[in-house]
Image (tube, rainbow, N blue to C red; front, side, top):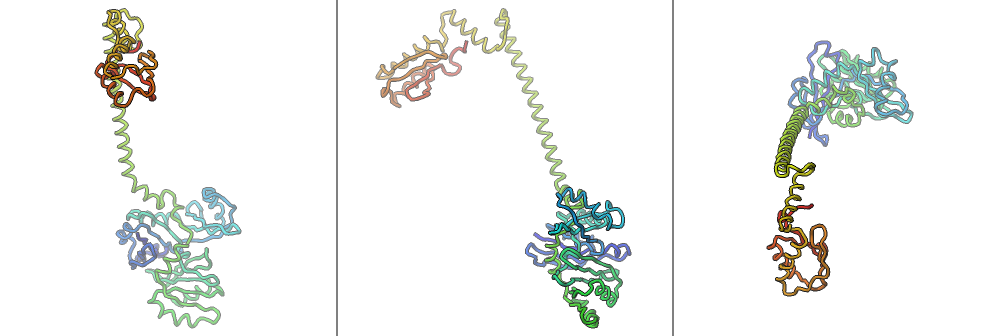
Length: 416
């Protein structure tokens, strides 16, 4: 998995019409540099789409960092309170800006990043349009290496001049766009840094140009030159602590995530609708079939028993009437006591020993039999089951030595 870091030039240089070249670096999860270079943002589509995460280092000149003191608030309440907290320090309407707050210190102070909303939205949408999966926007001044007791600075050459970045503390920094005049740029840096020692990061190609100029600066106002490498920016960006992308809301990095799921969600909803419609159609069909069968049973019952006044369950009443008719004709029902006991007696005749019954009861249209202890083994029970099955009777053993004998399903009359 890879992360693509892009340093975008200041808006002032874009407004001047200069060609926009963005330094970029592709790094692995371990921070190892895989690829680096400089290109227009529109030419980075392949790298943007293939990277797990895109980190846009927004020009320090375009991000204002403010210090505010706020009471302990939840994330939602802090977001709502930020415009009022920075209103006096921001030129223009805070509603036209994106505001992101860092973590609070012991005194309740927070660093708040302020950037023009229309500008950051253009950049983030451009990355999302190129297929970015996850976008973070960090202030470039907080991605400079920093050592307490000194000021960190970077001076880079852009298409329209110098871009100066300063980091005065762990949470504060600023940036300026300057004409391409090395001596004036150093004087500006020295004036803004005050009496603090400065570590100035320069591209290797700039070292020879700036070394003699730095040597001429007055003693006590030293500037230490360091070669600028992507490793510095990669390491410092991991502890920047201020990501402006989430503050964009629906137009931020999450928009791309929803776009990726748009078609799968549509297909899932369509499949759900098709299944729900299918289930309802099948339920209606089965309901019509059940109604037709019930009507047919009712008509059959009325045709057979036209004098029956109350019809609650045609099937049960039909079984009862058939059972009564058989009894009136001298034909016993299969679940009557006489039929069950006679069939059981016949089946019992196949056993070598007949005196196995302790008690015999007729209850719930079944014979309830308790067997004498130690009179029936597994072989004898299996033999008796076979004999009863031949007479369409079923033997079930609820507990050892307790039998229940009733007609097999469909072998006899119904319940009365």
